[in-house]
Every structure is written in C-alpha cells, then in structure tokens.
Length: 335
Image (cartoon, rainbow, N blue to C red):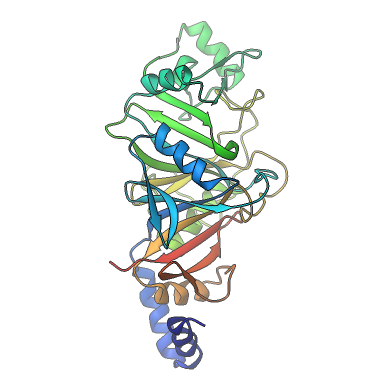
C-alpha cells in the first residue's frame, strides 16, 4: 500500500469524531477542482495523439506519469490502450468533447480538402444536412436548435441561416465525436458535452459535492432538490447529429476552470450507462490535497468507485461516480 494511503486510512480510522466532523465542515469551503483531463479508451493511442496534434495545431504530444498524452493548454487527454473497438453504446453520460477554433469555416475547408472524416448535421428537412450549424436555421427559445414547428415559423417569417461562426463535428479516432466551434480568440480544449438523467438535479449535485460553479446561477428560475426533476421537452430540434433530431430541453451545466461540462437531458428511455470501459471512460479533476476531499465526499455519501486512493503516475487519485454514472477522477496535483 502507498505510504500516504496507509497514513490517510489510519487517520480516518483513528481520528476523534469531532475532528472528522470539523474537517467535513471545513471542506464545504474547499475551492472547486480544476479540469485536469479527459480519459479515452483507444485501440491505438499513438495514432490518436498524432491525429489530434494534426487537426488541432495548438495541441502537442506530452508525457504525464510516464505515459504519452495529448496536451491542450492546461488540459490533458489521456489514453488507455484496448484491444477492441471501444463502445459508445449503451449511451453513457459523456456524449462528445471539443475545441474552440479561431475560424470554423477555414478549419472546415481544411478538413474537407484533407479528406478528414466529418459528421453531418441534419437540418430537419428530409435528409438534408450541413457541415456547420450556422448554415441552417438559427436556434430559438433560448436553445441551439429549432423544432420542426419552429422551422416552419422561420420560413414564414423569412428568417435565413446566419452563416459565419458555428459548431461542427469530426469523426475522430475510434469514432470519437469531436466538436470544433468558432470563431473564438484562441484555439483551446473548451468542453465536454454530456447527457444527464435529470439535468437540473445534476447541476445541484456538482455544486454541492464538487463546489462547482454553475454559469447560469442568478439568471432565471432557480431549482432546488425539491423541484429539480423536470420533464423532457416533447419535441426534438435541429440541427442534429441524428436524422430525427435531439431533445435540447432541459439542459444545464457547470464550469471547472475554463472548461465547461454542458449537458442535455437523456435522449433515451433507459437510465444512462456507466462510462467505465466505454470510449469516453472518465473525466479527471485536479485538487491540491485529496485528504479533505475524501472526508467531504464520504461524509456526503458520494459513491466511490474505488474504496481507497491509488497511485496515478507520481501522485494519488480517487474515483467517484457522478449523478448519471459518469466516472470522475480526482487527481492530487500539488500547487
């Protein structure tokens, strides 16, 4: 057993109850974790890293904990080599991830010229599709999409596609869905897009247990645990990666550093599956000291996927489970 792990186990087992309660109370003021990494399963990690550094020139190959990784600013993408194609079914809480880019149209042109596989966005009109979201109807009702009824309204009102900046998708290594969005000041890894069984309840979970910042707080109606279960909107909207559209309401999210975790409601009828072992295996968050976080999370009855801290590279980590079975790794990164 790791020496620090042994010491922590001993302390937790022998410390007076009053001391543990005091630590638990103090832990409510812990600063939120930083966004550390997204961990993918891949049949060929080296080829995947080469792909990302080519398609997103701001990224670079690096090492962390003795393993090759992709570095994008302060964010890492880790890879675990697997022998067979990792799955994205049944649907888990992690949907896709992506980068801001400076000019989405120049980037789209480059990808098309280089025959990089792309994913079409269906417009809701038969099988018509576009590469960039702004080449179809603009969003309505505070969302990024329009229902078929809202598309008809747009036609009647003479509303046209805006052109210019928008979002688009790559069909990446192991069929990872990768969003590129612009036009932004700099290229950077900026989000992990997710689904949640109950989006507003999930936002409250992240705020309560991980002290996350919710960018929408203070604007519009505020939900509590008593009313956070909000029914899915009845109509799907477009543009969408699927021909029959997607449900965009309700939606919510949180921020860690400048990386957003955005989510829409579960698109299916079954609860979301665990992320472990899937293509998008887990999210990693950084904390300067694991010990108070362990006290806090155990005191709040958060589910631990591993009962004790474990060695990760030259440091320690723990793995917990989020509200829709997403695996979240807390990594101790000394500042």
